[in-house]
Amino acid sequence: MCECPLCNWETSTKIRPGDVKFLVNPEAPNGVQSANLIGQVKKPGFYVARFKLPPFEQQPAHTHPDDRTYTVISGMMYSGVGDKFNPEKLIELPPGSFYNMPKDMPHFSWTQKGEVIMQVTGTGPSGFVYCDPADDPRNKS
Image 1 (cartoon, rainbow, N blue to C red):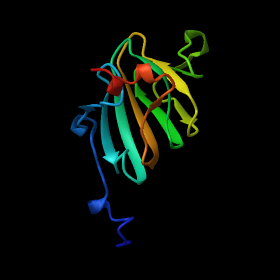
Image 2 (cartoon, one colour):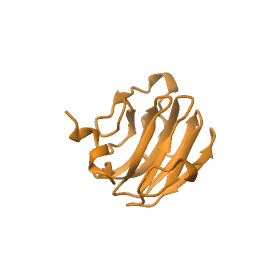
Image 3 (cartoon, rainbow, N blue to C red):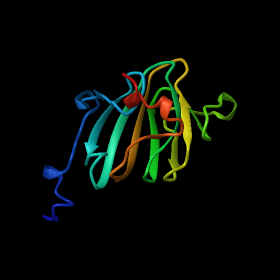
Image 4 (cartoon, rainbow, N blue to C red):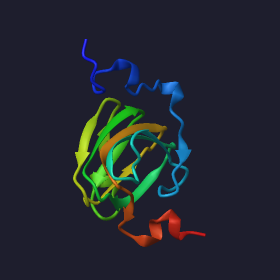
C-alpha cells in the first residue's frame, strides 16, 4: 500500500453532510451561508466550499476574481449571465448539475421556491464583486 500523504486514507479529508458547519456569509445577501471544506476561499490556494442559499433568494449580478466550478447538491438553482438580474436569462439547474464560471464573468441567480446547496471549487483568494455597488451587503448599515 502506498504511504505517500496523497494516498493515505487516514489523513485525507472526510466530511459527512451532517458535519458541514455553515456560517452566514457577510459578502452574500439575505442570509446566504457558506462552509469551507478544503482550503479557504479568501486565502491563496485551491478551495472547496459549500453555499446554502435560502428559498426565494435572488443574487444580484456579481463576479468573482477566480475561475470556479459549481455543482448543485440539492434544490433547484436558476442561474444567468449578465451584469443585471434578468429572469428571462435564467436556466434551470436541478440537483446534480455542474457548470463553470470564468473569472470576472458577471452572473446572477435565483433559488425561487426552495433552499439550494451548491458546492464551489476554485483557486483563491476569491470574493464577490457586485456589478452595482448598491447591491453589496457590505455597503449597507
